[in-house]
Length: 279
Length: 245
Image (tube, rainbow over all chains, first blue to last red; front, side, top):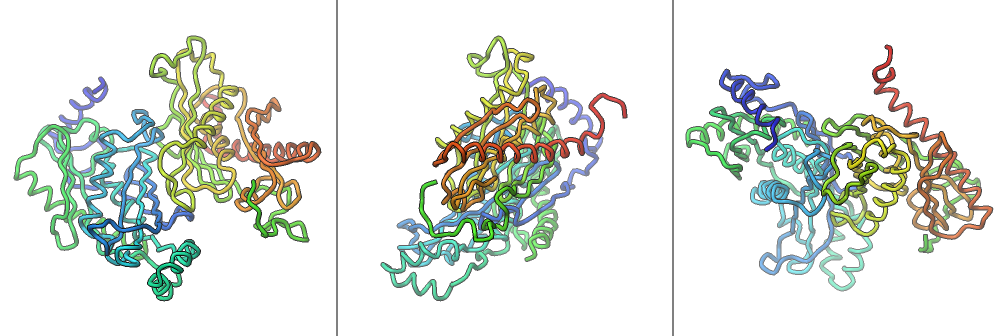
């Protein structure tokens, strides 16, 4: 850690003792997010999300593929997040490092395990042809809390996604020559149609600075945090994914409180997500 | 160039597929100062291209063996988002983007007053979030604005534009089909103040006379985009930095 964060740590820790944060927010107050779907017309679905000054562009591409042998009736999804050097003076080019991998995996789990993408509806011919959904997340400006910003961008992009029947018509028709079932699929789906998705869980990330626990860390809070916890809750208030990070610790009381508050914030964010994507 | 197609790239009235005349450029929109962490940044839309450029530096060049004791190095990195093209591109640099990064870096080293910053690096990140044809020109033009926004001293603001040949005619600023099915593509990088050409590539087939015409058109396109670059910067900096109000 460099010198400046150490000085800032004292400042932020003292501020937190008085119950305050640098940008004047309450401990349980999320920054204002903006969600703009459909920003990349070449992608099957896309969204630009800003959270504070954190700026994320997420694009969804789809392609035809073959299912994994252990799940012949299920589509496939992959998530990649790049901490590109554009976003921060401290990000370097090259293969993804462990923090980028953790980020992509946490976002991936939040979407995969909660079944947001109805992968069983992405099977075209059992054991032979399925849809692959590629979620690519581009972080272009880093102002803290990438976990929530990236998940939100991925969800908004998925809600914006249409299955690209028209773009891949030639490929589908060629495949239909060998496999008549694909022809039937094409008959039933002759136009692009919205990607089948279910109600998404929303992730909320908290950090602990000194003895204070706060939601949606801004850049400086993110850089000096002792410990971090991401909680994804669904519309019923059930917990769908969690990840603790960094080398500090929480008490169980703190964790219980974090989960309750995450549900309240998650509900508001989900409402905004649906409003901005017109669903 | 290359693949043949029966698409009529230029119709009987001399109109191109998107309705442009031979000497028309696609719509260009430029906005500066769009990213808060970068020292300078730019968002540029050029037809169907959507490009971000961010500049960091001058800062110590690392690893140290890359340092030049006499001047700064300029590292441009051209990168395409996986979702920027029809068929998903695998993330990370491929041979094409490495080559483009190299020619853009070299073009920018001519413009930046590198001798002011020995042992330093100036990093220029160019992200293509949506690509049509001419993304390298869009990238270089955006990089020029971002460098100016970062306050990097330069002999001029670099700009770029392509010309080429499609449907048998020399045309300015090739669109997607013209790039795929046309006869030649000639992207150039240009300094309007000195008239220097800082980037030049060509593929396809042009006669000498066609080349002259294409070069004229491309420089004309550069001058148009150059005006828009200045306008975008003037909007952010209405009075000279440190000057009188």
